[in-house]
Length: 385
Image 1 (tube, rainbow, N blue to C red):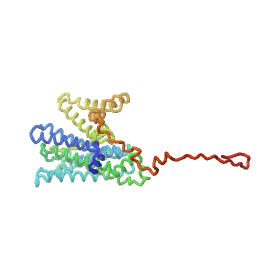
Image 2: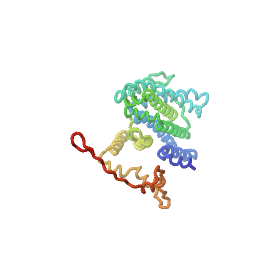
Image 3: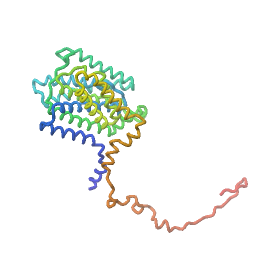
Image 4: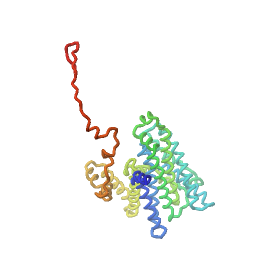
């Protein structure tokens, strides 16, 4: 019983809300997909949402928790897409496009991107702020230029790399399972002593070094882990499409991922998940509604919606409205437990429950003796008490 009560005290719903939300969506749409009630467009949308969540949360590890500005996340995704896509194309003849092909391609693409993350993490040891952003932005453009100038036999060159398409009915399920794995890794990292060291580096690198934190190790760890999940997102992108082209992974896409992180809140994993999902849904819906001659309005409306969201989140004049009408406050009012007078427990800090060295009755029965002070003349003729 004691273990059960301690488990209830240590259990915090906010630590598991991300697993519950993602798990619920995964189970719901898995049932709909397996029963034939989920259309192809919905399955494709879920694939894009899962990829966006992986990208946003992994970049949030660098930007939100480590405090480094990176604009090369699309470059890591490009490496994973090309390397993983090439591996899957090579394995297609021997083992087909099955679960084994998917797992091997994910591992190879993620490791390839992680190695590049370590390479970028090395100059990050000396660069910060705008300088690091320029280096990572240049890295993304270099990666794009390298793949676009390859031969048709290797990575397809300018026309892109042809990749096998995984079964659409199951790919989004594997994608959301990878989202859960990523959340488990990153959230447990952030709540551990290593996560506290990472956030300490964000707050003050000089103070972190002074307290003995290995800044070099943690920076490389964060960049490598973030790049690994970006590479996995790239492999999922290659399985979601029949062709991988470099034009997709330009600096605009890196900025789009950064927008997801910023709108969700710096260092807020739940906010990153919600922001990535909403922005992806918004893009797909605008592309569906605004077609033909109205396609030129897609970017205009998309940018306008983002501007309105930023104004709502940061305008000082709307602070009172945000505090009064926010989801957290509404949920707390909805699920607030009403206190039952019959279940009120005794105060654990009552005076008769706390052991003391002196009995209170003995203390109250003590006689107080008043002594008169003795005055002695000093050498100067003054009296001291």
